[in-house]
Image (tube, rainbow, N blue to C red):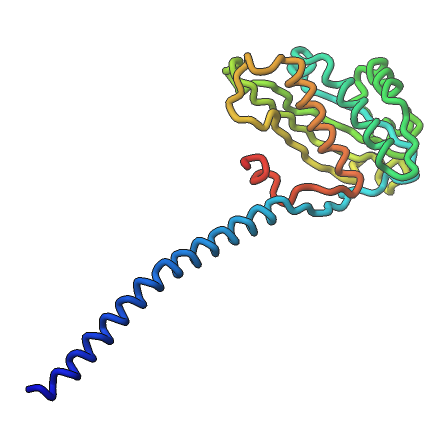
Length: 234
């Protein structure tokens, strides 16, 4: 009887010691998990902030004479009569500033030519380049421009969409676009922004600026956020 007691006592001591060590280990494990979570959050934040280089989609404007022409749907022209000249001027300025060796025709000259030639959109594409006397024409065809969601004028939810075509006067087929792109942007980035929060002129200029910047980036290398949508939400 007595010989069995020391082994039982030792067994109880071992159990108690194991339990004590286990309780000590739990906070350490929890702290380790918390540290891992913190490291993960920091890593995610760093990843979201990363930038990437985006190469130009079209390089054929370099060292060329270039004009910009802008067309818009009749409804857009009626409701936003300043959109066409603003887009033409901003695209011309951006290309002239960022594309190497480009010689840009004054956008007011190309705009005046469009006004003098009401049927210019029906002309053969090569003829447009010849009439403007340039090697390349950036043809911006705006298919949508709005500041509010359909049927709701109390919310700012701007959208601008266009097809961009490049006319090469010296190509094998100057009457066909050498390259075509679709561009669509939204502004403002804040969701459900009430009409009272910003004046209409500010929203319109912001949408035009974002749209024309997106168009211009087709023609030169640039840096962008790797995750632009996550950055906006953050």
